[in-house]
Amino acid sequence: MVVAVVLSAGESRRMGSPKALLRFAGKTFLEHIVASLAQTKVERMIVVVGRDAEEIRSKLARLPVTWVVNNDYAKGQLSSLVTAIRRLQEEGAVIDGILVHLVDHPLISPELVDRMIARFYESKKLIVLPRHKGKRGHPVIFSKDLFAELMSAPLEQGAKAVVHAHRGDTLEVETDEAGITVDIDTQDEYRKLIGRG
Image (tube, rainbow, N blue to C red; front, side):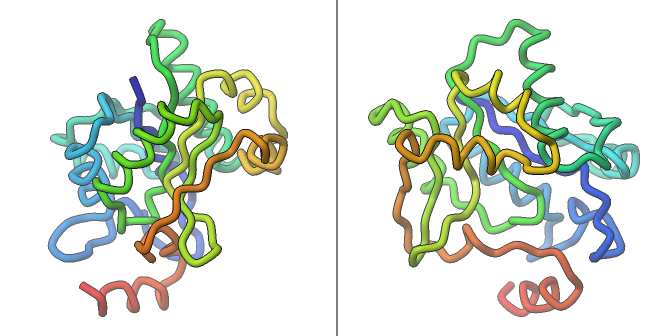
């Protein structure tokens, strides 16, 4: 089983408001992501929230997800990922890996996610990620065998430290979907995205 972990705990300082609640084509970013993941072979979704936890949960309470609060959200994305892994371990969940996605990447494709999951099982690689025109993007699948490493990695380096340490065990899935690299951090980037919708 692969569990999706959507990281939505950041401070959204450059945006000025919670990215999870930004609207695009009639839905919030988080609703787009969850709707896409619901069409895949992902069997469960965890959303990690932090600074704006109550606002996000109250406005999106009906989503079919497990909400997990990261009180250490100021320490960066890896702290949120660690929070999700801890939750899964506390529950005794038997899983093969996690598919990690960022809430500021709303253009997620169910077809690509399923292709990545299939390649994860076929290749038995520790890390699977998409690549478009030479550039890596999101989401990223991490095998359960990397959980201990992720939990002990330097928070300031993030999960990238683990990815760099396992170049030989990483599979890049080529895609023509430019959306894997669309990262919405600023109002300008958001305006450009809305223009696409």
